Length: 468
Ligand SMILES: Nc1ncnc2c1ncn2[C@@H]1O[C@H](COP(=O)(O)OP(=O)(O)OP(=O)(O)O)[C@@H](O)[C@H]1O
Ligand SMILES: [Mg+2]
Image 1 (cartoon, rainbow, N blue to C red):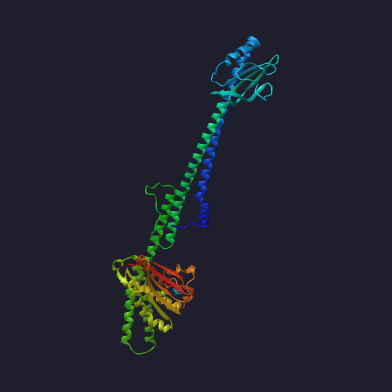
Image 2 (cartoon, rainbow, N blue to C red; image 1 turned 180 degrees about the vertical axis):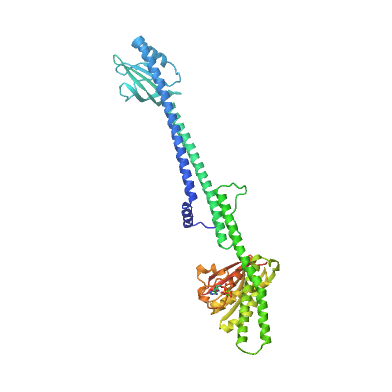
């Protein structure tokens, strides 16, 4: 299991926060949360206001009724009707109290003038003692105080404990639904962001693979072609890649065709020059010129052969030639072949191979690739050159390293292209085709080739899947 260090998690988080998808998802969540909060506040306000209005309407109706009674029947009538309405529990929470000027109750269902409540006409809020199942409970009430002539007081109020309870319930319900909605919004935002990120990531990955040289890679599209913006982007990118691949294929074909078509007349020209040398063996300026022309023809033929070799490896036409072979043996044979060249240059060629590294491959092309690497190491590197072959974790690796100037990191990709030669090596003979063949051979074998630092010098590593 990978270990999660806090710094790694922070770095990942930082990367996530900087993505457009994250910002979009956050915006979505923000708008969603604000609207949910707005709706909930509105619902709360509406229901609280409704309860308040209802209480007020009941009180107003009751006050109007009692005022009418008082106008018709005077104080005694008022006391009578209050006593009648207070008798028994009607269950509507209405509270009545008529007192004399001292606050002494004459009638009503509240035991006495609520303590600490000022005697001022108008709206009034107080707590009163209510008997519930034999127990005395303090409950909130809200109502109005009316001063009747001669110092009498009439208190009409309503028990609002149920309304308060109702309001509490609404608050709790809204709070919970708000929380659930926010969690859903968060999940929705995260899913949306992830989907978006995943699709951008797919495009990025494909672009990276194409840039690494796999030009036939394409951006995956949704199976049921939704034709959304991402699908269109993928389709456009894929069309563009198709076009580029076609153009590059065309260009390569032209250069391969030229190499192919010119090889035969060139070989014929060379043969004629040889013949003219045999026919006129006297030494002179003409024979020297003919010899130089033959050398030139040889070089041209070598270039054409190298180009055709690369084309052949890249086309995969020789895939059927693959057979089980020992990479150690191939390395040893190549080293033997280059031993005289190394000696001539005064270079030490060291061989470090593990015996019996079996891979499936094309003997001829692999030998050529290794020969090209040794040729480069002796030509540009010099000093000590090492050729090693090892097997590790099911991978067979072949390495050629020298102690020359090496290749700067920013040019390590370009040297694999055809005809690319770096500035310092322009004076040495060569076509810039050696590494192109090495890469084509590695790809033909589903292997990899990587250029690295040998500190100082160049280290080229070829890797293939080992057999068994
Ligand atoms: N071992 C090395 N050390 C330094 N530079 C190198 C080395 N190998 C290759 N290069 C650079 O990479 C370039 C490309 O190498 P490549 O083998 O493709 O072509 P070449 O050697 O120039 O010609 P060819 O191999 O076709 O005769 C070389 O011209 C050289 O500049
Ligand atoms: Mg070379």
